[in-house]
Image (cartoon, rainbow, N blue to C red; front, side, top):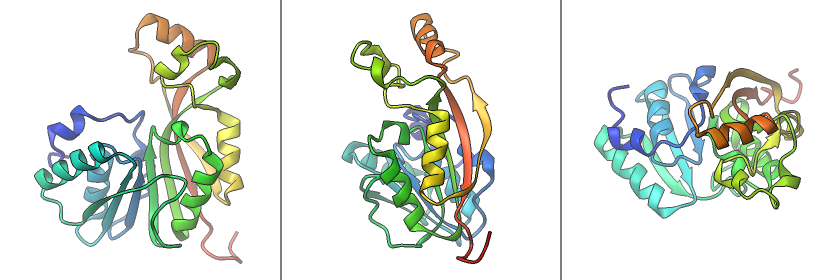
Length: 216
């Protein structure tokens, strides 16, 4: 991973390592939803190889500019970054093999629409890999009372079961949690106490789109 510039890592805001799923294969077309400074798209480019192609999607001009700068430093020629949102992905139906995301979808108000869009752009047999924050208890009712929930990055998080059910509702099969991370372990005491109350943690999830209408 020596091709990943320090400037990408410095601005990295992910919550886990979605690439632990090993979903990306050589030659794959990959989409990273919420690509930020570009760390995960650079990892994806390494895994997809020179015959693969990687698209980063972000909604902010500042992050897009930063990612493009990091891509230029890395020397990769098979990565592009485009502006857009998770609920309206500017890609054709069935155009990518893998969708990855890291610490982003918990911030999307309409998660069901986001997962439906991810399902749409995946080819039959395509894979989803992501890392995100989930909770054991519902935080939504407390958000208006405890604003710190947003500051501590769990204000938009869903209960884990509900989160997994939304992925399944979009049409995905084999939805699995393959890793759990105590993301808040190094946070200030007040944050650790609050996140523990709601059972907040980071999970790495894998899922797939079935290969054909007749496939299981």
